[in-house]
Length: 450
Ligand code: FES
Ligand SMILES: [Fe+2]
Image (cartoon, rainbow, N blue to C red):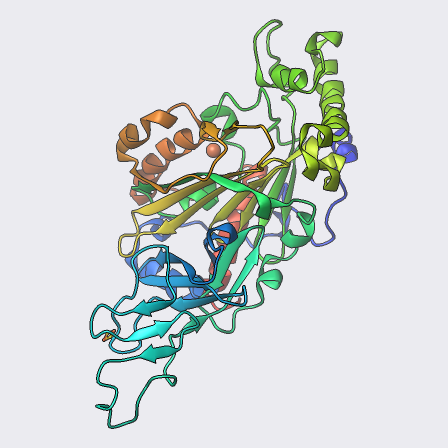
């Protein structure tokens, strides 16, 4: 980072470690085997997935008592149920009689009625009724047996659970994310894209990919014209819990100027906030001054246009574009009006496959019916679940040309290369330091250091 860009970045969180070079890392190799070995996959389940927090869904899916969401993770299934007192409880989706799965998808009910022998569980997990209750020599189980419970909590509008009853508190696990994003009312947002895509690649493709922006200029050539991905203007941060973040300037890169008169997103953004892009004497001034002018206009005009949540945000929230990789598998872009969540989860048995979740959340604004998100222009309304198979791109034709399509299109090719005998230890750039750091955190889990 140049001295100039250091001076314009917001204050660094005291826990942040500079991730622009690998000086703080051990230098663990990133072997190819971790991307295709079933044994490695089993170790990830035993030592990592059972220790971390997982996202089950959104808080706003659980409105009334008895509402529940189901999250299948590898061979497990967990349900989170809204209680009469408004709290949430999470249970394994497993009948306490002889192990039948209780529910197959999200829903609403007062009690869970097992399809096998008819046991009925209250939504607080306590057994309510069984057929032939006098036929249990060991005693009537009603009121005695309970479903097996897991820790559950919420942050940023997401419902989280952990398999480990001794997991650290969610706030500790995520620390300092709740602190960093305390001004953002993401829990008020609506999920306008709820997509899951089956991909022929190991799940670690996504945390690798989302831990660097080095690929952006090549893989997403449309991006630098509105978001500066240059490593010398960005700030890359590592955190002790294994999470990482990059903070980029929310303005065009100065590296490749958009030719005069070419329609572009930055000019449109200026115009949308009452600023004439042609008032600046040259491209550099437009970028450096227009960037600050539009942030100031958003803050001063936003509340009167219905963007009341802007009152809670700071100027930096408009100037910088953060991208977060929460260990292990949740990537978040948290912006004033929107959140994009990208997540991969392993296939239950095949390390060469995963699911990729794309959720786009948007702040409801009075009178606003459509918004642009990473999946294009979408109605600002609650989306239905949209399940796809990437199928070499055929399953996602409507998103061709988008950043998300471009990333997925690379995923399967990389998986092939990582399985090859020709795969070599990665030769990482400084701006890819977070990739190796991420693997070192994974190794810490697998080797019992976390
Ligand atoms: S397994 Fe559920 S009632 Fe028997
Ligand atoms: Fe990408």
